[in-house]
Length: 110
Image 1 (cartoon, rainbow, N blue to C red):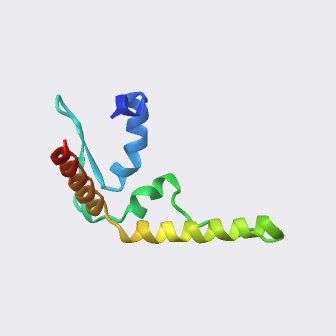
Image 2: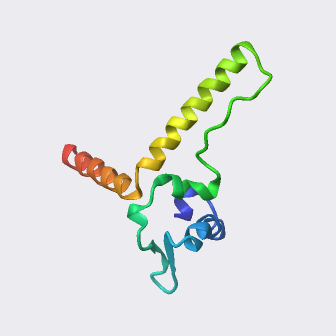
């Protein structure tokens, strides 16, 4: 994972630490060590997975702005709320199933 992200192993451990503390991942030591899915990970909403990184969140429109700036703030707030609603509804298991289906489709097409 560190190689794919272009990060050091320690950086990846620090990024995954909140998930280990939350019980979403289990750190495994030893020769084949790494991280394994924790109990209930597949039923966890994506919003909970993104929460340690303070995202996604709907940004409220700022007061005191006018014209185009206010319109952009309102549109961004609405889009953020829509993303958050999707992240609360979709689980990690849904994402895994979609990814597997896409990979199988690509393998079949090749």
